Length: 280
Image 1 (cartoon, rainbow, N blue to C red):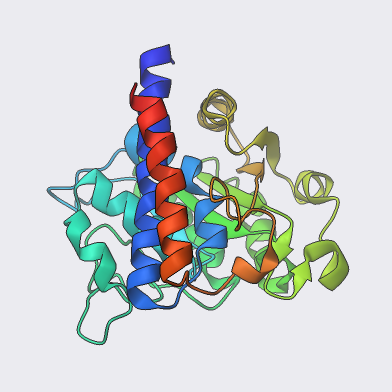
Image 2: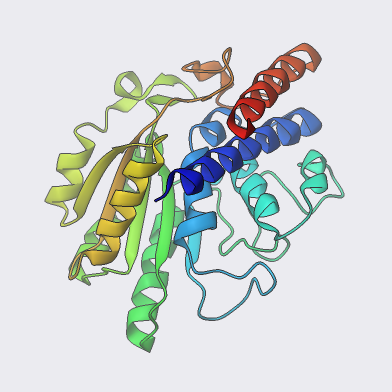
């Protein structure tokens, strides 16, 4: 990609992070840590990779995205809003009783959401089914699914991976956000999923390991995913939980809580400073 394209993606990722803070602060609840760690991949998917149309969210031939780690809706909603599926101004209504932006994605209420998720492990299974259905019906659309590294402790994830390889679903790309932390702490201490790459290879995937905050590496990985034939593709992203908000970075405590007034002010100040630097 050109330097100007990359800069625009970096600007958008920063705006996505600002939306994460706005929504969780507005709700006084939510999951900012794992939303912030995935801001770049959300941005790359919705602004460069996927074939979608915000003006026609139910377009039959669109690419599909399934948020398997369904609790990180602040990141998904923020990128959908910034992409034009609904107003950015609605983000602070997140989790309010009368809002369509609830804590887990609802495909019947939120434009751009392709699957209702929340129970960990089930999203990637649905994505596998979507990819298989596309193969059976001769469709050329692709299916993407984002998982948490704590989520892959769920056995259902590996059943889906086994099926994806068995059916040679080269239209499926799963992305694992390996930020190393889950609600109870370090994933290696809770129930280690390592070595993640080796496991995926053993299950029949082509795999790329990348810095999940580096757009060049993300682009290379998604290009390889498109070029891979006869087997599904996985991208394992090394990321920082709470990325770009100093007091949230690498702190498992920010898995599932919202900033208070002072924390909100500090987070937005840091992100606005970064945005100004990128836009300069």
